[in-house]
Amino acid sequence: MASVSVESVLERCAPDQRAIVESLRGLIRNVVPVASESAHGVWQSINYRHPESGYFCGIFPRADRVQLVYEWGVLLPDPEGVLEGTGTQTRNLYIREGDSIPAAAIQALLLAALTLPVSRAEKLALMRAL
Image (cartoon, rainbow, N blue to C red):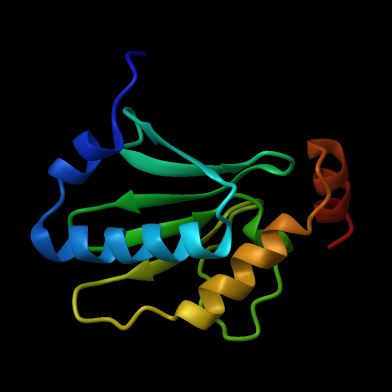
């Protein structure tokens, strides 16, 4: 697959969605400044990796919303109840035009994601224990 740029993902966004994506990008960079940012052409997403923890979240602009996906979201505490999903691993936060961005909840989830065990095997063991 040919690599794509973050800008090419953003170009496909409507202005209101782009504003949401840019807000999320800024929030992630502020909370996890060491994270690397890359785009995925097939998923049309902007993805974040921590140097030690690996892939922890991605921003997925969609026609009717922007989706912030936490890769191991099923393992994250969510006292604010902002995460949705019933899958075995990921959890999503959906933001639509006009929604306020729950910055404090997102920050807490990002920091919690980085405290998970580094290895996939350890994360899977935690999931089995749920």
